[in-house]
Every structure is written in structure tokens, then in C-alpha cells.
Image (cartoon, rainbow, N blue to C red; front, side, top):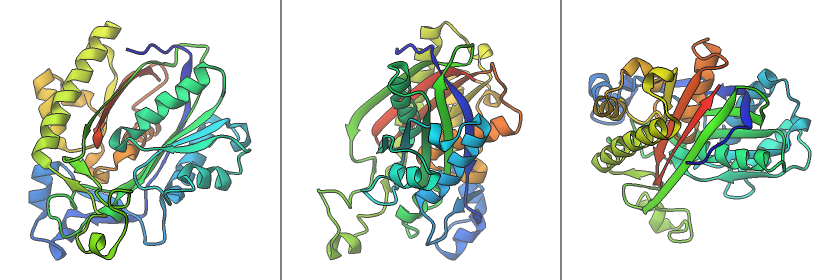
Length: 328
């Protein structure tokens, strides 16, 4: 359990594409229905980028909104960390595109790949820089264009994913607002959640394209078991280590993966669903973007205020999983 007492969130921002892909729209592509998708996932619609839109487009707008709320200029930033599995390019990093578009100084800017846990991993990285006084203000972003690596002939996966971005400005805290703990985990499993092609194992070729290796592949039942188990384990660890109960928490903000998974974890841990903040029905699974997108939405709606205790939990490909307790 890593203790943190000197870093807080100064402001948040988010961005989603304009185009909406509703459940009923899938009936033109595959054998499914709005009722079938809603029952199995809790998703009603998701946002989709245009062909020419990139991950850095969404990240830039989310970052600008976070900077505005934090009242911090781009030239005041000391670092940028972007959590994403759908970068604009393998290199340069999406963070470098973001740095250029914001007009920042020559600061460190890099991407971090931890799938759906990417935002918490990126926050932990930023916290380390700030605690060690190497940096003062760090822009942390979770941004994805997952629809670009989604196989719309795969009935079991294409209904799940959407595009979006969320951002937060982290900096030193001298008051009650602060991250209190941040815990990261991983264990290799390249079967249940994987993008097979595009790396050194399966570089792009006619064969890899024909076999669909550049689309995500998932095993739903294995993901269900993993996510429910580890979400409960993280809740137990955070509660016991920090001496808190669910009554102390304003919201648990989970990675927006699947409503059946979230409800199963809530039932197993005896949690009231009103304590779990979700916007899965409107945005689907946006991987690393899902937690900061939900956080910003809740803050802007007045559902989260300064002083509220929040618990972030995520689980994704790798396998990776992570949790963070913070007083907003």
C-alpha cells in the first residue's frame, strides 16, 4: 500500500466525439438488438470518432478544459503522461503531439500502456515526479479511439467499445485534498484481452490483416471472473489499509467495463449501486479514458465536491489492475 499525502487534482476535463452509435444501429451490421446488448452490458450508446479524428484530438480538448478549470497555463506544465492503447502513432508518442498542440515548453511527454488501468498508472507516475520535486504540475490524460481497433463483425466485442478522453492536472497539495494511496498490479495473460498484431511478434503483413490480428480479441467469461475478483480484492485492500468503510466514500469510480461485472462485484461486496458512479450506458467501454471521463462528468454535474472521498478502481489487458483513494 503506497501512501501519498502531498499531491492533488487541480482540475479535470473531458471530450467525446459528436457521433453517437446506438445499439439499434448494430442491427445493420450483425445479428443483435438493443434489448440483447442492454441486458448483457448495460450500454445503450457510445461515441465514435470520424475517420480523420485521432486520439490526440480528443486528448487535446480534454486537456484544454482541465487546464482552464485548474487555472494553469500550458507553459506552466512540467510533464505530460498519456495512458492509451490507441496512440496516434507508435512513435512519436501521443503525448508529444499533445505537448506540441498545447504549446508547452520542452518538457517530458510520454505515453503509458496499461490498457484500461492506464489512467491510474499514469496518475501514479505523475505522483512520483511531483513527490520527488522533479515536477510541479503534470498533465495526466486517458484517451482512446478504440473503435479503430474494433472488429465490427465480432458480435461479442464490437458492441462494447467507444471513444473518448479525460484529463486531470496534478500538482502539490498543502491542504486536505490529496491522493491517499495508489496501488498497481499486473500479471501476464495474453489470451483473455489482446491486440495480437502490430508489435514485433506479428508485424503488419497481408496475412496479419486478412486474419484480423489488428483488432482486439477478448474472452468474455474469463474477463468477467478476473474483473469481479480483483475489484473485490482492491476494495477490501483499500478499506482495510486506510481504515475506512463504504459509508466514508462519496463514490467508487470504476473503469466502465460492463454493468453485469460492476453489479456482480457490488453484490459480492455488499455495496449499494448508488455508491458506484457509472456512465457506461452513454459511452460504453472507453478503456483508459473511462475513469477520468466519469470523474470529470461527476465533478461538472456537482455530484463531486472538494473534500469528497473517492475510490478509483480499474482492470484491463495485461492483465493489469489498479486502485487509488483520494480526497478530491
